[in-house]
Image (cartoon, rainbow, N blue to C red; front, side, top):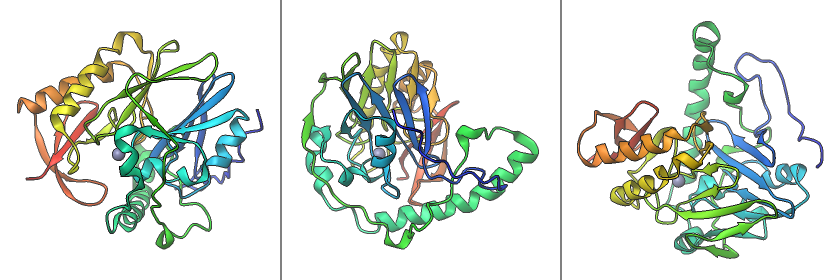
Amino acid sequence: MRPRPQEHTRWGRDHPREGWFDVRELEPGVHLIGEPGHVNSFLIQGASSAVLLDTGLGVADIRSVAEELTDRRLLVVNSHYHFDHTGGNGLFEDVAIHRAGADLLQRPPPDGMAAGYMEYTRRLLEAWGPYKAADDLYFHLLTVERLVRPLPRGFDPAAYRIIPTVASRLLDDGDVLDLGGRRLRILHTPGHSPDCICVLDEENGLLFGGDTINTGPIYAHLPESDLAGFAQSTRRLAQLEAGVRRVFVCHFLRVENEPRLLGEIAEGFERLLAGDVDMRDNVDCLDFPVREACFDHFSIFVPAV
Ligand SMILES: [Zn+2]
């Protein structure tokens, strides 16, 4: 293994960490390559090869980060085709996605999506300053794992583009990727988008929840989202609860979760379908109005109308 990527550290009040990626070993052979406040990717290593689960926003070079952590052969696996999980795909030769995402990954993004996300990034960084200041004074929740970072030096948000890519390999439900001493099972969990997968490392009790399991808002309001399918997928994941030790998620600042989150989310979808929830108005990251069903450790966005 090569040395850890250099962390730019400057103990400024708002940004005590400046390196774009939050790189941490979560347990032996599993690294978080996070973009805090945005999206989390994971490097999962076996004895003979490694999987990079998602490639992030593409605002910084995730391949060089992954290659500093492993010299094993790298296969990228996309949790689904959305740009915030596939932005670095173009840096890699070997990219796998669920069969249902193959065409979606190649399509140009909707107009304004890249600019809209950069505008969200601007708002997020603007909100971070007062949030961090209040935390320093009153709340003290912001440990090193939860520090939002400024955009990388030299990165121009106006030049950010979402580039469609082509997968080299298609995945189906039940496929097993054998990395040598570690086997990853692909679970097709449609709902957020038709091609969503979760990745299960059964022997080690790890579940990677993609955009199906999340903390904070779970996006079930997109035109391609399917609420009934989402409920079915989360019910299936809840059945894994007893055999799983840790659940890792792709969004927001609570990356690591207890397995009971799986049952809570399945129950949340059931209650939502039954109309047994408190709803409030909110907006998603692109500032579209949504209705939000609120639960103890997460929420679910549904269409505003
Ligand atoms: Zn998504």
